[in-house]
Amino acid sequence: QVQLVESGGGLVRAGDSLRLSCAASRRPFSTYAMGWYRQAPGKEREFVGAFNWSYGNTYYADFVKGRFTISIDNAKTIYLQMNSLKPEDTAVYYCAADPSGTGFEYWGQGTQVTVSS
Image 1 (tube, rainbow, N blue to C red):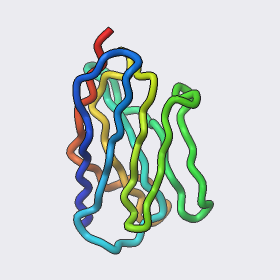
Image 2: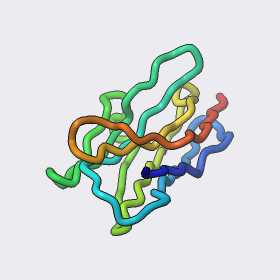
Image 3: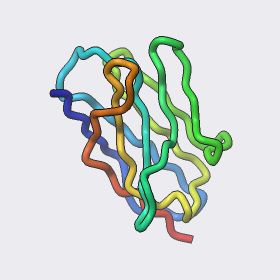
Image 4: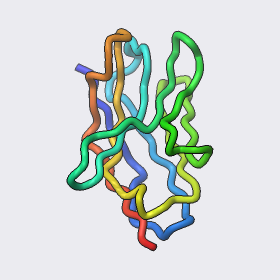
């Protein structure tokens, strides 16, 4: 159904910034929320942040602490601006979409973010 495509990952140094983008291959589409998850080697996928259209706001995991910012454009492309990156931010970052408020069920292929010290 909906295909999500992430871009913007790469290899950076600690303290650098990256901006990830996620675009849907089919627009428009019904969306309750769109967000970002990440998964480091040997760890489970964890929530990073999301935008909820019903409430019209963003919400983040505690570890973000002001470093990351999610934004949305009119075409429902979601962005993740990551500043002050740390080595522990190294992970594959996934875009996700919740079409009906029941949970994230559409996932992108992931984009690798590697932060060296």
